[in-house]
Amino acid sequence: MIQYYFPTPVLQKQADKIKFVGIQSEIKEMCKKLTFNKNTEWVSNNHQLSDITFRSNIIEEHNLVCLKSYIKSAMKTYFETCCGTNMDYDIVQSWMTKTRNGEITTVHNHGMFDIAGVYYYQTNKKDGAIKFLNPNPGLTASQTFIQDYQIGIEPNQGLLILFPAWLNHTVEMNNTDSERMSLSFNINVDRSNLYN
Image (tube, rainbow, N blue to C red; front, side, top):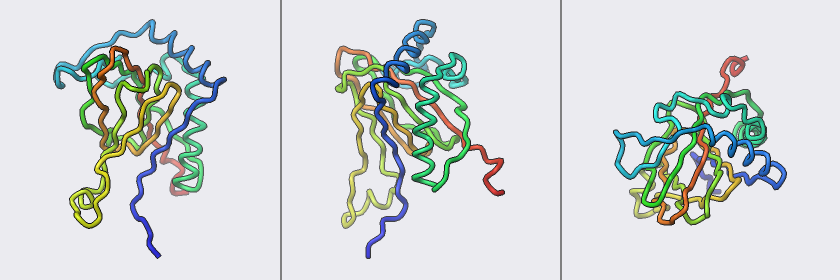
């Protein structure tokens, strides 16, 4: 028997029509109040952010109830699949990202948190896939067990992706004339009841 050890759980969940309308509507209203800037310490063609300090939590600050409900449903599936039980959690950071023609997102992770997520608000499906890098460096160096060193997921409006925050990822350059906009967030698991 062959077992695959050290799997990396990545959840993809597409919003149904009813949820999609509610989520899109509340994000559209919120975006009217946001300003976007580039972090000047990053590469010049990096994406724009609603908060370059990552101190905001726009999901809470703008009371995005439809999105919170959608994330809650996805988190339940994620936890039950990965851990065998649902767990309490807090969304501790959230922000909008805007990526125009010629802009990219360089390789990074959200490692000080437990789970990271992204919701695609606006995309033409051709404006840059998110790419997850293989977290097993030994496997990527092997000639015998060579695997893809990265796996891409094409963006789609209403798509929610959850993944371990330590997982390195990047986003391809937007080579279209459309803006891609997504809402990203970081989650920490409530550890107060983990060992009871």
